[in-house]
Image (cartoon, rainbow, N blue to C red; front, side, top):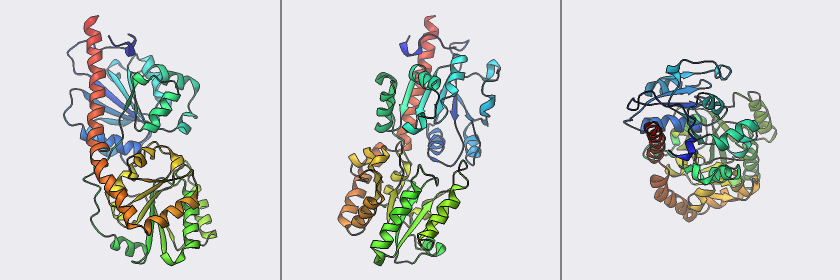
Length: 386
């Protein structure tokens, strides 16, 4: 029996029966963690267990999850309701912003794996009881980056219960198909403009205010470059009025004809194809898949060192970091890259070497599958020894 399981979990009534894994995710929105889970489930292939998905909130990805396995939305207020024995799985796989579900897992005596995409700010909003349960209950905590791994260690989670599985992308999918001129024309951007891109939900956490300040710096100090700035992503459902404030700020700075908010799109590649430089303005990121996507499409990436997660990309040489969260420093870095084809080539060459081997959805799915297999086999071994 493995010590991590502590002998307190519910086991199947029949040793040879096919186990069930329930994935729990906070939402089916078209954002990083849910998209990653969707693609990972697709990439796992043949499984030795049954699986289903429980979402705490609905979203546009729900129909795609349903195409893979049984999926339904559970309102958070109903999580604690008494459930039939058939609904209780052999293993919970808690995937992003679902740690409160650990309390239910413990009540049901079901082991849990936690796949951690969050940053320290996210855990500051969790109760101390939930944090304590995260320290003691999961059989495994999966860190999506070295930054997250260090965070988990600082929270008191033992190293032996942490696995590093970097999030990944389909590197064959994220390939530039066009020169982006068609989309430039659609949006109304001159063909000779230099386009600086960003992608993500429009929130303070993603640094949209810092990004606008960077745009002001470039437009004021270096107007000869005909700068344009394109943000792909929509306003947060939790901050619906924030977008109005952002637009007013853009207008006040005289940038309404240069900054373009393109909205959310199922396939953002046609927009990424316009970008000359991608600037990750996030104040904090666990890793950042959009950095990987844009690098594979041949667009060099700049990020803030203060964001945390992209540090490992910089260590491998394919993302340029600027100090802290300084918009002026990012503007200077953008200008340097625009005027240095050699530096751009170095970043992109490093990305082509490392991303297809280290940051692919296939690798991540394979490692996730092994973690689940290990947990289920341990359940079988524990049951056999009883």
